[in-house]
Amino acid sequence: MRRSALYVGSVRHRRFGEPSHGFEYPVWYLLIDLDELPELAVDTTGLSHNRFNLFAFDDRDHMGPTAEPVRTKLERWLRSRGVDEMPASVHLLTQLRILGSVFNPVSFYYCRNDDDLLQYVVAEVNNTFGETFCYLLSSDGKTVCDEQAKAFHVSPFQPVDGRYRFRIAAPGERISAHIDVLREGNRVFDTTLTAKRRPLSASSLLKTFARYPHLGLWTLALIHYQALRLWIKRAPFFSKPEPPVGSWRTRNG
Image (cartoon, rainbow, N blue to C red; front, top):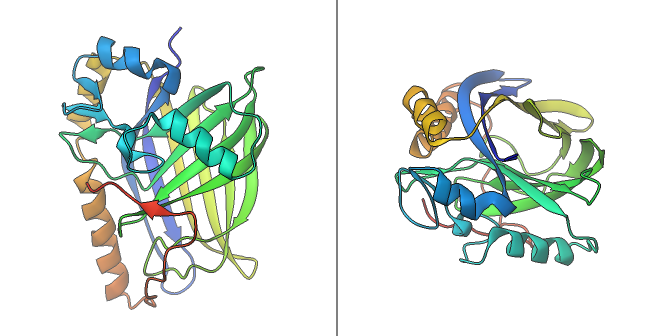
């Protein structure tokens, strides 16, 4: 049975304090079993691996802009973070390139052991300045409930200092991921992704794209539109610092 799937749902962002702000928009993602990736590209009309198509997955969009397989790059990164036991399987939740364009604010790597338990999750965060940084999140076997220092500049309306609190459930019929931004123990921002599983096929991809064509460049446009709204509300502006050690430049577009 194929473990890769399509997930359709929504993302909600909320800013607390002054000025308050919030919005929600529909999204769709692919959950890709990286072991199934070659056959997905062969069996799914309109979907390609490392070449242009209506839908495409490109290894250069993840874990650094090299053409090596994503899993190879992921395992090298895990070893650099002191992980000794490599995952038995990896499922990547991400957005595809559509007609060559993509912007993924965050992708999640669900890493499972030989007993099919969730070992850990890697959150791969991209900002609009062309930079990427990853967080390694611990799991109890089914869910992630982890807190880490915020190390990466994402928004000019949020300083880098603070902490992230991640709550992420293993994928099933639904996917859920919730991230709080904490500062001095108080929640100042949160993001919630929820989505429902659908079978992955050429037909389901086309139907979902026809209903929700706004990925890639549309996501970037939405980010800049919400930034304009915050600027109009006179939200404090924070200059971009130097990227942290361990980050890398993202492949353009």
